[in-house]
Structure formats: C-alpha cells, structure tokens
Length: 55
Image (cartoon, rainbow, N blue to C red; front, top):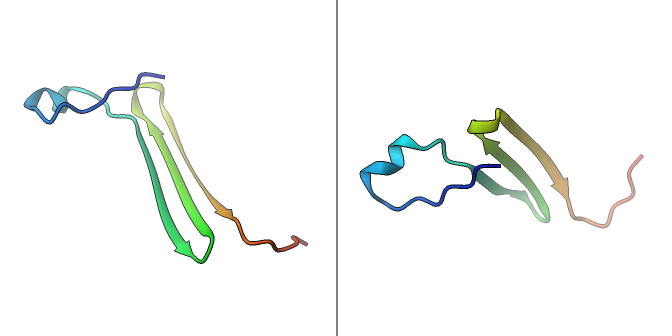
C-alpha cells in the first residue's frame, strides 16, 4: 500500500492519496470507506457496534 501524507503544497496534486473515511450514521453505527487509488482498492462497509443479536 502506497501511503502518502499530504504536505499542503502544490506537489500534492501529483499523488493518488490513500484515504480512510468514517461517518457516524446513528448511535453506535458507522460507515467506513477505504480508498487506495494506486492499488485499485475501494471498499466501504457499515459497522453496528450496538449489542444486538443478528438474525
């Protein structure tokens, strides 16, 4: 995985930035997104941290 940390300079536009994104959907429920353009990886998934039994 090619991790590049932005330098806040114009050179940042020449890099495919790896990103990890998290958003809170509701109480203890989150959506995670992972993107690694240089390796062609894009994934997102929802995680429910509530203590509920699945069916």
